[in-house]
Image (tube, rainbow, N blue to C red; front, side, top):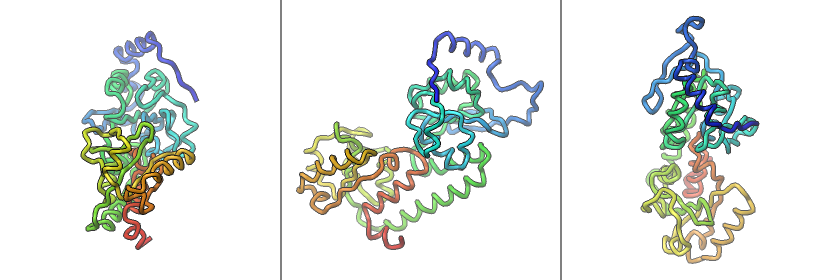
Length: 310
């Protein structure tokens, strides 16, 4: 595992090389044109890739998960911090975080493909890498449907088109099943606790908010102005959610947070014993595991409906 600190003089040198054409894709004096192809990313930009992609760098944990899910994890040469799933991802070299990307480290790896997450990775960093001649493919993920489309395209790019089609079809079938099972049922009011100190929930326009809707729920704080608003305990008491879902990783902290809410039996979710704990990544990380999160949330909101055929 490594992390190379960026030095301004090295970046200047890389930029100069790119300007002179030394860091751009190989010339055709020794490599046939057929060895390369042009693809359009989800930002509408043309990206030049080798026909056979062998070296991939991912700039967000969700993208790392997708590459592994498609069975191409062996092609990953680096990822960003918090790329911890699946387990082999923990051993990958790091190139910074998804916000603070070490451009020099990425360039030195000579990747065939750099996967960036639009609206998450800073545009100026992605633009800088593009100017250096790095093949940056930008992916836009705003919904479960976006994730499925992105994985189909990604599979074709990295040599897993047939496998991607099969796996994505299965995911789409699971999403359709959830929709079918909760269709026509009364929407259950739910409060999602992302963090406790400060108390943070999900507002409109987030992945988690869209999952609530797909799972047959109603976000108790869906009319807030911000995507991840801070709340007071009093606001939750007034909202009177029918279900409370606590997102966390640490079991001890989860238990502490559950005990906190049990002090307020005036909340319908507390009085009826409907406080649940789910893995944070399943509901906030835009990867194929959001489908797992969707199913888990639907079981919490509509246990009878979702248990009928399981």
